[in-house]
Image 1 (cartoon, rainbow, N blue to C red):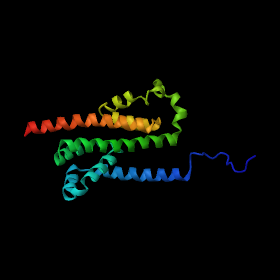
Image 2: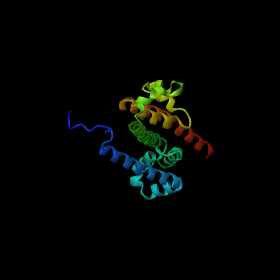
Image 3: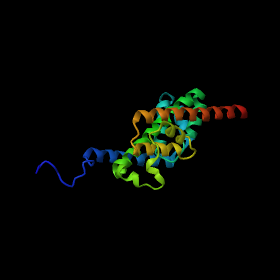
Length: 193
């Protein structure tokens, strides 16, 4: 019998994992406080005061909004008014991709906590057999209004979708969605002037 093996200990529960969970919990608390006090007019004033840091601030706001139910569209409209349509499309695409990565890692954390891989075959309605790794599913499901993007990101983390596939499908879907949103908003603003 090998004395180096500790019986009954879960090998997934390493001290590094606990640090990850503590940092994740702190990030969630900060995001919750941010979401409860989020005000676009304050962000606009902050961007005008510290314009040289504006891009980084906007990208950070997108990433934080990724873990909250607060939509990012008001930030996109603010960037549209601040920098114009091309910058708004680029910043919204990059920002929402960062938010999607945060959501992906939330899903990965859920899998690590629950050992989902063992339980997914028992899900009702054959949900365990969804084609989550399919690029078509990743792009099209992300375009569902309301919850599509967050659902796809979290489920992709739970199902361990390969990062390359996840990233390129996320960027494509975000670029298409943000282009449609920004250009239609821009056209509406010009029409109302």
